[in-house]
Amino acid sequence: MANRHRGEIEAELGGRTRTLVLTLGALAELEAAFAATDLVALAQRFGSGHLSARDLVRIIAAGLRGAGEAVCDDEVAAMTVAGGAAGYAGIAAELLVATFGEAAA
Image (tube, rainbow, N blue to C red; front, side):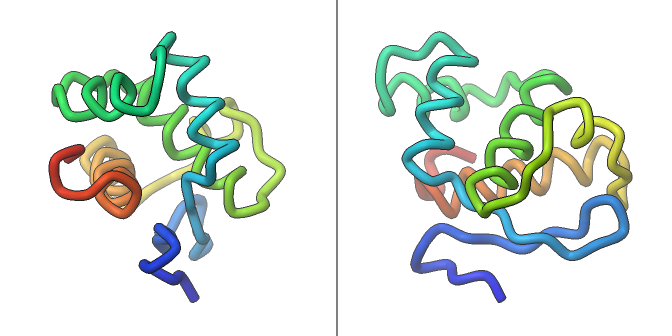
């Protein structure tokens, strides 16, 4: 069960309920992927509201890896989600809110 006090969320991905969390390591991974200089720049990037499908995959994959799953971005990209693209966006938004607060959504 996800613990929101630790920034964890639960989401159904690929037919399974999974836990996602952006640990410090996962955030460092995202800083590198988005060429962000620090966490503030990363939060601002996410708060811009301009996220591509590849961005959503990276965020969700980092969250899964942060929770201990051994998945690569391509595996996450192939997972099905209820609601299609909107479902992916909702998962990423919920994870970002759990990590950074409402301003990141």
